[in-house]
Length: 229
Image (spheres, rainbow, N blue to C red):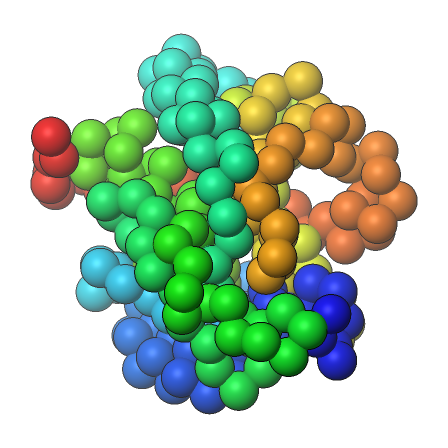
């Protein structure tokens, strides 16, 4: 394993990923003052295809029919990716893509796997699933913090399939995002050397429950449609 914490791939973001994330995220990620105190920004992945500003979104307290339908479609797209490799920096609107390595991320046992692996990192997976399921009406940045702020807060008792689950640690704020698959399960791309997997009862597992930073629901951008085939 790398000489870093087991999931450091999503927790740190230095080198090329940090520079890209800051450059593309500067104009779209609002200050984190409105986020929970434990959810401070981190450079998990470089934003790609991101809109120029983040619209204000209201918290979601109860499910609605349309979000439920779209959310199920997001979860179905995510389920279809189970078994695809993790690739640091991988994933875009079209699907799995070649990753890369930066100063600390993309390595396994000292070997760079990122630049030879076609797959997804955590925010690349959520970006793709929401874009595909929404036919291009929801386009998230390839950056966990940006995705957090481009989505509406969801109470745990209002969770729907497709909602995004965010995780944070003191040493790695907002370091990971997964997709709620329904029935308390999460589909996610965790770290270099793993495959996309489904975790049952994720918030009943001490490791994930202790790092849970909240759930969010991406919203279609009104007046903008960028359909895909």
